[in-house]
Image 1 (cartoon, rainbow, N blue to C red):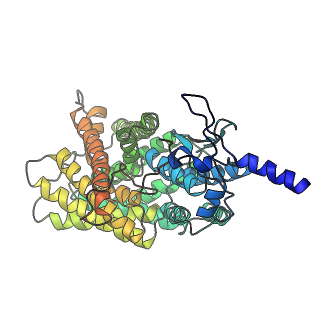
Image 2 (cartoon, rainbow, N blue to C red):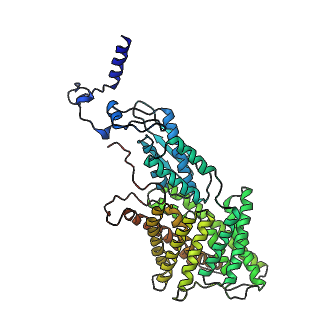
Image 3 (cartoon, rainbow, N blue to C red):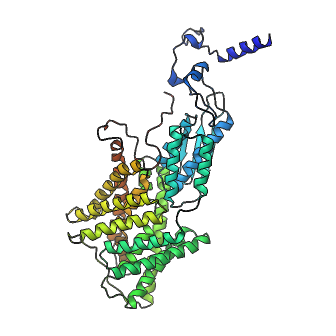
Length: 503
C-alpha cells in the first residue's frame, strides 16, 4: 500500500500539466503536448557523474534544477580557470567565452558572466523556484607565465570535449597553478638581456652596443626582481628601471668605452624592454569587443606604467645635465634599406624568441613566436621602403602577425596570445618614445609630435594584431569553410560560441 502511494506521488511529481492560455483549461500532461526543447532547461547533473543519456532526458519531464553543491563546484572550477587566463593577459571576451563553455559542458547552461579588470563574477540561474547562485573571484596578481596559460588551454579543451571529469580537472588545475616556472629565474634575466641586444641590432647598432644593452637590461631586471620582493608598486619599479637604464647608458657614453656615434641606442633598447609585456593588446581587444570597463582598466595600467617609465627617463636626463655628463646626439630613426632588411628580420626573430623565453614559454611556443616576429619584421622593413609611413607599416605588419599566429598557433596547440604579444615586441616604438622624452625633457621648447607618433604606433600594433586574429578564425578549419560563424577575436579559450540562452 505504501509502495503504491509512493509511486503515485512520484508520478504526480513528473506530471506537468499545461493550461491553455486562451481558455484556462488543462490541456493534459506533457505526454500529449508538443515538446519545446529550447524552452526547457537541460538536466543538470553532478560534475563527477556521467552525462545524462537521451533516455534520462525522456524519463524526467521538465527541468530538474541543480543542487547547491553542483553549482558551487562548477563555478569555483570555472572561476579559477578564468583567473589564470585573466592574470596572463587574456582579453575579457576570451575569459567570458571560456567560462560559458565550461559551465555549459559541466551541466550549467544558463549562466551570466561579468568580467572587469580586477574581478570575475558568474551567476547561475536556476529557474523561478530557486534562487540564483553568484560567485566572485578577485584577480590579485599579474604574471607572464605562458607555459601555465598554455597548459590551462589544454585543460579547457579536455573539459569542453568531455574527456575529463570535473574532479580530475580540479586536481590538474591545482597542479598547473602550484607548479613553479619551467626555467630558473636567471634564464629569464638572460632572455631580457638578449631582447635588448636584438632590439639594438634592429635599430642599427653594432655588436658592442648590443652587448652593453644586454648587460644593462639584465641589471635592470635583477633590480626589479629585488624591488618586487619588497612589494614595491610596479609604477615605482618602472621609474627606477628607466632611471637606472638611462643613467648607466650616459655613464658608459661619458667613459668613452664605446667607439660609436650611436651610444644612446642602449637607452632606446632598454626602454623597449620595459615597454614589453604591457597589456596594450588586451586593452585594445577589450575596447573593440565591447568590454569598455575592462579596457579602461587595462589602459589605465598601461598609461601608468608608461608614465613611470617616462618619469624615470626624464629624471635621468635632467640628472645627466646637472652632473655635467656630455650630451650625445639623438640617434636618427633608421631608414630601411635592402641591405638592412636581413638584419631587421634576424633581429626580429631573436627579439620575439627572447621575449617568449623571458615569459616562460615552451620551446614550441618560442619557435612559433620567432617565426611571427620574423614575419612582422620583414613586412615592416619592406613597407618602410615605401611611403606608407611608420604607423601604417606597423598596422599591416601587426595584422599579418595576428593572422599567421591565429592560423598556425592553435594547430600546434599554442595559445595565439603568446604568438601575438611576442611577435609584436620587435615592433614596439622604444626609439620614438625615447626621442620624444629627450625632446621634452632636455631640449627647450620641445614638441610632442614624436611622442604622439610613438603612441600612434602602439595603438596601430594592438589594433592590427586583433584584426589579424579576427580574420584568422574562418581559416582555422579550412579555407573552404568561409561561412563559419565568427564569434569575435579569440586569443585564448574556446573558439565555438556557446548556446546558452532561452529563445
